[in-house]
Image (cartoon, rainbow, N blue to C red):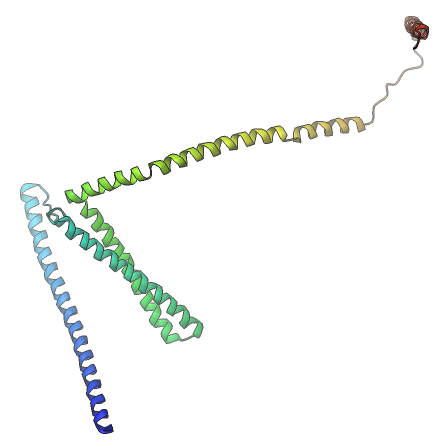
Amino acid sequence: MTSKKVEAAKKEADKRKFKLKMARLGRKANKEHRHNLRNQDRAVMKGIKLMQAKIFKLSGKHFKRPNLASRLPLWRLKEMQKRKTVKVKRAHEKMINAHKKLAKARTERNYKAISKWRRRFGKFKKQIFKRTARLNHFRQKKLRNPQAKLEKKVNKKNVKKQNKYKAKKQYITKRVSTHRKKNLNKQAEKNDLRAAKKATKKATMAAKLPVAKPKISVTAKVNTKGLDKIIKKSNNNTKNAKRLLDDIPIA
């Protein structure tokens, strides 16, 4: 019984190995086939460009290749765009995983793994750049299709309608906030006591300064007769005012 089990396990292992080998060979064959197709395409394009140059020499008009996006139906273009977006997302996820594994390898100081995951990270980064560029170019190309162009216009209008109330609300809040800021600034100017403080400081400094007394020369004789008369009159007036106040009866 045990020998039979061992034989069965061996057979299964051989089958798996064979399948893996065939899968790898298939992948290699597909890559070679794709490479050959590219070379064929390049040869065809070279021929087309030579023809274009001849046409330009003879007629003086540039030849424009017909765009496939204008001929294909909209559902097909959407499928193509979806596939391209999925490709970008997949490359992004792979790049994140590679970055995590690279960080782990660095902490463990596994230099073999570091070199491997650094290579992988660089590969996925390049993939993202290329795929995003292709996607953006395809989006622009898609607009040559009249149905796609119309759909984009309609979507823009719908988005505007949806965001109309939101935009209005934002404008109102902005206006209110600007008015509030202006009022606050005015109030701050009123409440600001810096100017008053400066004035009081100046006054106190002026009061503290020593006053220069005028020097009177003793040699010069001053005529003070007129001043004496004025002082006497003011004294008499004050005395008379006191007498009048004393005469008033107090209840």
